[in-house]
Amino acid sequence: MSDEIISAEEVSVSPRGRKVEINSELAAMLKKLKVGQAARLTSTFGQVPKNHRATVSSVIRKHWRHVRDDDLRIDYTAEGVPQIRVRDRM
Image (cartoon, rainbow, N blue to C red):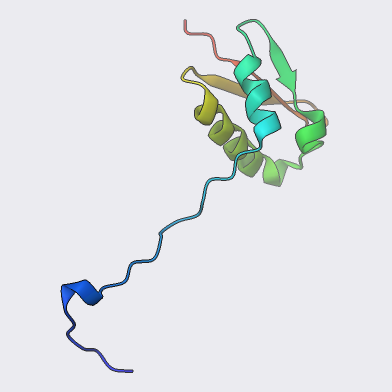
């Protein structure tokens, strides 16, 4: 293959990036969470090792932003189970 000049009509474009994958059950649960409530995500994520918590937190935030406009707080139990709640706006 060699470089060549082509017409603009011949340009082909492939999609960039990954398609967002949303777990509908997790998104529905996050949407129902009210101020003053928290959710422990034992069945969705289980015990998360410390070196994987940033990845899991990223997945949780992605789902949160998909269904909500407010802020989120993520805490992990001593065993590593993620717990989430609506962040106080004080």
